[in-house]
Image (cartoon, rainbow, N blue to C red; front, side, top):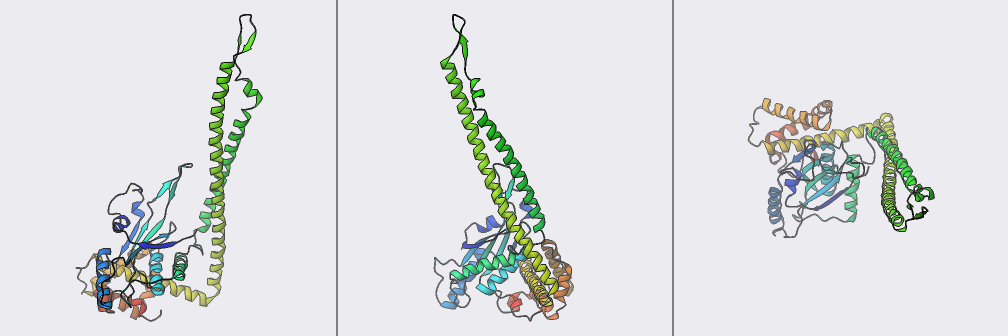
Length: 383
């Protein structure tokens, strides 16, 4: 399964849509509870901040047509986590200076297949980002290779090409669907051939109407016979065309499913190779472990900012309350992203990082680095 990311100018109703502030007729309300949301700042507040910083840095107002805040729709898997998307946001900031401040995972959009009546989910995430260059105060300027880099980072961070542990199960499910489609196709072919055979001479003879004349001889009634043939041809033509359309549709679905099987087989193969390298190469294992712990540290920082944004008036002067709030943040991350608690033990073993995280929770970024735009992981030492 492939992913993609495409940034465009943010819409005026993005927050209403992304955070489901009202209902929409194209979503399944029963699936809305599966959505996930993260917000560091409101769009309107961020735009005000961008305009003020541009004036301060360049001495000029931000241009009216400048797209200082942009939004991307990212194709994800059913089990893509907020942790993976936070890690993507971190990489976009580090390598392309794009600072994501809102993320929404949507699992309640899709459509019902007309042929199979099966629900086809459209799993995706919305990333809203600050597009301001902190060095100039103006909007970021990217070239074509930068946009190519965005796609590379997205695929890498979301593991869309390398595969995940659930690939084998999904592969078997798709192969089962192919088998079902092929059986349906066989039934349709039989129906199609049956309809054509009904146009044979024996069947056509039944359409001929004969009646006795005044002498008792049977003669063909031309008008009634022609009427029967016209009616039969209309019926057969309509049914054959419908079956032909169904055949083409099923064939297309089988081809698409076969393509998915090939992709998933490739993912499974690459995943097995990657596991083999991790188990046999200590250097690679240590590198992957560090990347994993860094990504968790990154989401802890963002969750701390979100917690301070949601509850700005909490008294954080008492250490016990601070520890309790940090524990709740860690518990939420474990639950929402399937992160083992042992990972937090590894992170908080480092006293410097632990102190920085608690300081961030107590005081916020303004008292740590002088600017909330630069996360503390940029200034800490390696794990």
